[in-house]
Length: 496
Ligand SMILES: Nc1ncnc2c1ncn2[C@@H]1O[C@H](COP(=O)(O)OP(=O)(O)OP(=O)(O)O)[C@@H](O)[C@H]1O
Ligand SMILES: [Mg+2]
Image (tube, rainbow, N blue to C red; front, top):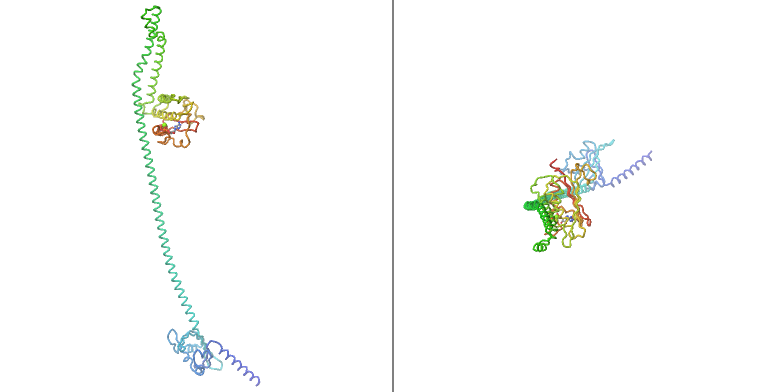
């Protein structure tokens, strides 16, 4: 037993020694007090912290050894963690400041009230120097704050720049919108200006057309007046001549019969009569006189025909629509153009082939229609100039129905509601480019003196606008040209 207790004591001593060494080796400052708060034991770290040697420490009150500061104020005895540990008799851990020489340390104090069996109460104080940690934390906090400041500053700068950019974007968008708007306005203005210019040029064209139409119709009307005047003036004397020719013929025949009777009764006349008979070539005269009279009659009839045609052409009395014979209109026009159809110099004659169908009378503005025939036929004659033989103009007429007949060109008698006049020439034809412009006013391929370029434009107006008909041209180079004139028998617009 003795040996055993000695062993135990020695083991205890060894263990205590080890613990002493271990506690002395750790970096935490550790001390414990008796129930009066006097230090009973401390480790090396504690001695270093307090900066006193162990002899001064042991037996001294811990509160005196460890004056603490919290929030800049010295900690009172009553609130000292050691007192608190005794009072509460339980653990308390808190952070304080502690002045060591000239430096202020930040320490974390953990006080534990211990109750040992068969011994007085005491307090174990464990102190950890967290100055560096605190400093690092403060530094880190400062850095963090600086970082935060920097971030905030940068954020502010960025947001300022962003705002500026947004403002710039807004400004640009606004400028763009303004530009777009002004562009649109400019475009609209340009369009309006173009439209106005177009309208103006259209008005100018219309004015020109109206002017030329007025000039044309004035010309036509004065030509018509002149033609009608001449026709009227010629008509009376021609009728006078024509009417007396029958009597002249009769009287001549009677006189010749009487002469024959004289010759039979006096076969040997005296020398005076014989001489005179020979001087006047009586035999030839007797033969020739009836022929002269016959040709005079033909001539007079021709003059009557011409007068009639001139009146038909002029139709001055017919400013209103009137039912007329189309063929008579064409014929009178041809008669006026006859001089141009004859052979001249080396130019051979132009043959006119008439393929007239059966036409009812057509309700129309006769003199205007004659003007169309005049224009189209004049163009055909112009086209045949310097063309080799045969030089032919073919005029074909027909009455058609727009509803009934499958073959439009067949005569239809009473069913027909339109007439077609086809005027063809075997001239050089019209190139496609020219065909497209044919009916444009002032379009001409002829020299200035020769053509105004109005003939077909006016004809188009007369046929299409005035008579609600159709005027078109078909032509191929070397195959001649055909103008197709189609007009309703009655005024469609008026009927409607
Ligand atoms: N039968 C045709 N053959 C060939 N070309 C034609 C014929 N008819 C018309 N043209 C062409 O059409 C153009 C226009 O004809 P339009 O009758 O309108 O004017 P123009 O004959 O030149 O002048 P204007 O008739 O005013 O004296 C002519 O210049 C000519 O080139
Ligand atoms: Mg012409």
